Amino acid sequence: MHNTSPAPLPTIGAFHPPRRILLGPGPSDLHPRVMAALGQTVVGYLDPVFVGMMEELKSLLRYAFQTGNPLTFPLSGPGSVGMETCFVNLVEPGDTVIVCRNGVFGGRMIENVERCGGTAVVVEEEWGLPIDPQKLEDALRAHPEARVVAFVHAETSTGAQSDAATLCGIARRHGCLSIVDTVTSLGGTPVLVDEWGADAVYSGSQKCLSCTPGLSPVTFSAAAIDKVRARKSRVQSWFMDLNLVLDYWGATQRTYHHTAPGNSLYGLHEALRLLAEEGLENTWTRHRRHHAALKAGLEAMGLELVVPEAARLPQMNAVRIPEGVDDLNVRRTLLQEHAVEIGAGLGPLAGKIWRFGLMGYSCREENVMAALAALEQVLP
Ligand code: PLP
Image (cartoon, rainbow, N blue to C red; front, side, top):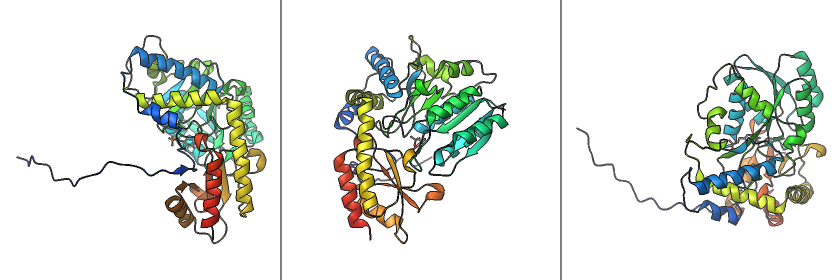
């Protein structure tokens, strides 16, 4: 016998988050049109109307990624699912993978390689600097057995941008496929998949695309698909096995794989329509313009940017915390008294830097002004 009456629960009110100005490392603010799209009625994931929207999403993503790759679609899951999908499909036990690390997310790539049973050869770079292409060249000469090169285009943990075209070119010359993380770059700074010749590229919905978190746009070259098809072993993840996912996203005759997060996809569809309406060039220019204003204001307050100018991401601005200033207290006061969220340092940079994101719909003049005015009041 068990007691069938559940323990009483005190009344819980509806959740109403306060309005914030999201100027951290993501998520970013949502455009009102994206919010409206999210609240539309649910339809089935095989409904012809929904399937039509999926096809439009693929076209919109090809524009965002600047690629003609037929295999371009949003995975159901955050950027981490995009990262893991690339590794579990392209890395087999025993494979050697060159991983470039200049921040937190390169470190996660190493873990992914090892969990796939591969060997990671790490090209280390100082945090805050872009990957030095010569170091990749040297690593590939020393490891002719390597078949894949992986790197983060826009390191969110530091705000450094690496030269993706050069790194992908080196990988290709050495007979390697490239895995490129564009979680923070897509929609903020040029991501030119075909021009780079990148093979497996993933991103996230919640940064410069300004959609809700939980979707990971990906695109795969023909060479990447050939590699997946030629695998000797089965992909160890059922959910992320591209051969299976494609029965839903790739085929003309769609079959059930998993229940697609429909409303989030409506939101992404609208976010990508906004991107296309503004145009990529204009979007990149807007990010650079507001970055310049933010940088001028931060420097006027005596704050120093971490990344050398040539490699600075406009959408992720890391500054050193001045000596004697209480990191947590400043961030807490900004949030609680000024509704401004900024990012803390990660890993070895924890307590040493702040990160000011200017991503997607968050990247607006009034937000730059609000952040600078708030910081001026909060800094001792
Ligand atoms: N890669 C980079 C460069 C990121 O900035 C992030 C998230 O901040 C991720 C991967 C993981 O994305 P998510 O948090 O959406 O899983």
